Image 1: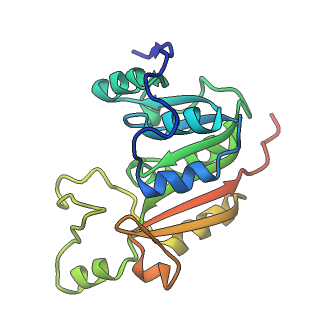
Image 2: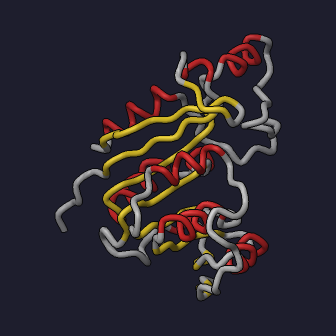
Length: 215
């Protein structure tokens, strides 16, 4: 059952509380006063931050009950919904920016969610663990699936079903007509620029959506 929870006034003051470095980078790409949709918004940290600091109108989508409650406590409007069910409840270009943070690799239909992101917003931001990190290759050479801080699960219980490298994602974006505007790469929380394909554990992309399909 879909559950919509109305926004509650935030108890947080502007700039209060720390958020992850990758979320700070994502927030830097969100325009002042814009409309933002955060898919798989978790505890609402990103939306609370941009609402308090950039005056955005934000909506989150989250499936877990406890995280939905935390969002409401932070003053974040949230819809309880499984992303695999699609984004049909949102109109074309209803938002300026749509965010999918560290969730892409767990989606069953990667192409579909990226095209749906393109439909509901002019700009998109997506982040995912970089399977091309050198330690992953080393683990495979030693006959084991990689287990790292960014991907802490064992092969038999991982929610990650579509792992990719930076080049893999960029090729898919080109195939789907998505124009990459900016890229940021991180190694254990620190932004890096040298040899990111091998050294980064997390990649964050800012893109312009593909043109809307004629109906």
